[in-house]
Length: 190
Image (tube, rainbow, N blue to C red; front, top):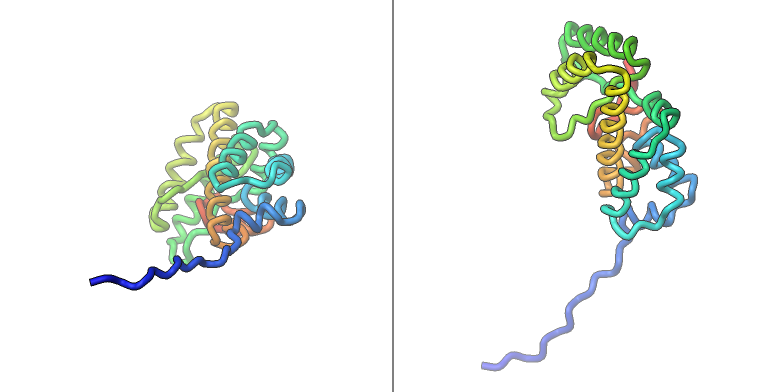
């Protein structure tokens, strides 16, 4: 049995991606998106000025490199834009008090908000990860903690940028510069 002629493959029209929108956005729009990911003007300028990026991996590599190059002043600016994520409404008041006390001790010791990348930690385990992180990092000397905080910021920025450019909205931390330290949530400081 013979078949008739094959039809040409159907071609879907090209649909722009979030990365395309980022690459063609105005400088101000791109910097605004980037400031939601890491609250550093220098970092956002550097990433925006090197557009276009061929793919997300190239953008993430540039974001990582720029994060590693943050000066102490840029790092301080980025840390000033961070705060702990809000706890769920049904969290016991004792947990809120424990977190507030731990955060106050951390800020008194290091002079900036505690930042932590929660990765794939389930939301119901976030509080435990945060408290454990604060307690263990309180023993660090200030220089060691600066390095750790910078790495946590880099990981947060990478996660926020990835989520934002995979279509999860303008940026998962699109709060004014007191964004969250969770891996993909935005929260005002309590």
